[in-house]
Image (cartoon, rainbow, N blue to C red):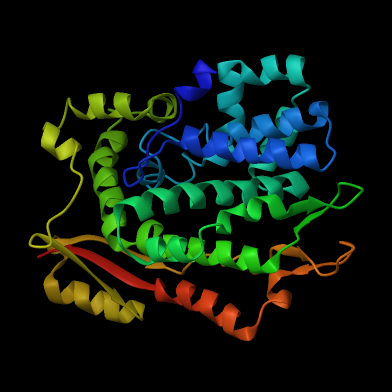
Amino acid sequence: MTRIMKRFIISPHRLYTRLDHSLLAALIAEVILARNGFSPEERAPIVLTIACHDIATPAGGEPIKRINPNEFDEEENFASILMSSGLAEEWAELFNFNLEKASAWVKNRGVMGFLLDVFDKLSYVSLDCYHLGCMFNGKVREYCLDNPLFIDVWEDVKFTPDKKRFAFVNPERLFAFLMARGYEHQELLLNPEARRLDFYLTKLVKPLYERGLITKEQLLAWGNVELETELGKYYEEEEIKKRCFTPDDYDWKVFKSEDEQKNFCRMIGQDKIEHTEYIRGFNPCLDWPVFADKKQTKIVPLRKCLSKDKIKLLTDVVKSVRGYYVYYKK
């Protein structure tokens, strides 16, 4: 367990670790699979995979992955981390763990891969909404107060008798969960203020990585403490531990088209541009499966069970974050 715990890190704008998130997802999986008749021997490899699905995330998380998305793809690095740590061999002997299957699940392939993706989202949304709601009086807090039991949607996951498919039994509660996830994207995951901290960490590490002063192997082995210690060799402490930006120094704008984005960049000068990006939105998960009958034999996409107004409400949240962003110095 120590070998697993060392690898999990805290995202710059989150107050919990990936270990917290991964363990919650694994606990949900253990309960749901047991309730649906999976034996301990069947559950073990799946639950272990879910518990360590983020183990190959580099120190620093998403900002570091942005430096070289292919090199730091945690799904692609998952197998090598488990092999080098000895966990793959140890778990194969103890729990009939199959690294090839687990790697496919981490890439969201097959029924268990889709289950991992669902429980991954259930876990991080619940944790994000809890912490964000405690800290900030915004849409997430208001929504959670109005819908305090939306995360109970995890209990609605049911498998078919042959265990080859699963679906949710309560489309309304699934919709409530997805709306919370939408507001989480608005206020946290795709919030320009939060993302600016991501870009800042990228800016610190990228030149060191490109010069070979920090390597891929180190970033995959380190946690955040080791990364901050190494950055201390090259930057002042206040630069490394920066937690906010003042509006007097930095700002951002969003545009409807790439041409508008480029025109703005030319107008203020490239020397002032910190970062540009296009955000297409996020998957509203309207294709998630729902049982359409009481006997739980017919499965349809969630969108088939929702009113047009509710579908519009969810897709409007997706559209609200879409655009061409510019982050710049004033």
